[in-house]
Length: 223
Image (cartoon, rainbow, N blue to C red):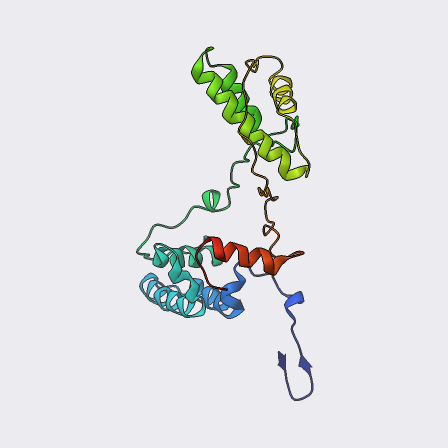
């Protein structure tokens, strides 16, 4: 705010330059601008240390970072627009490195053949398909079928025949994996409850208190 005895002018944040590092506030930016105007390099460096101390008090969260002192000096250079000639205990950061964009992580764009089994199932099937025929491969197919049946029942609250799972394995493998004849899966316990990820096994739905008490009894806890 500026003015004299006749006029008063107000300044709003929308009318001034946007802060590159708002966590330190506009007063620190003004300090840095005054710092850059000091002609004597020794005095300029001395005042730079004082400004860093102010920045540390304004942004105490920086202590949670590794090498926080260097981080503060880096921030000082960044606030100054990397145009600061001082004696710093740390090398000045390079703007091309600070402002560089991280490499893009390639995403899997292949459509999932069976969403209720998930994408990882296809990788497992590829691994099994590369195995030579024998007892080990048969055991791997059986373990996969048990897991796929469990995934099937999570998203489809109904019984499923073993043959359906076997057919899905052969279909998802494109015929590369043949389920051996006579293979059998373990029987599912009548009280088994397969819940979707994020669900609370029915504790917060109908009969929740009863289910919670049953859970406590099984684990030796009192009601």
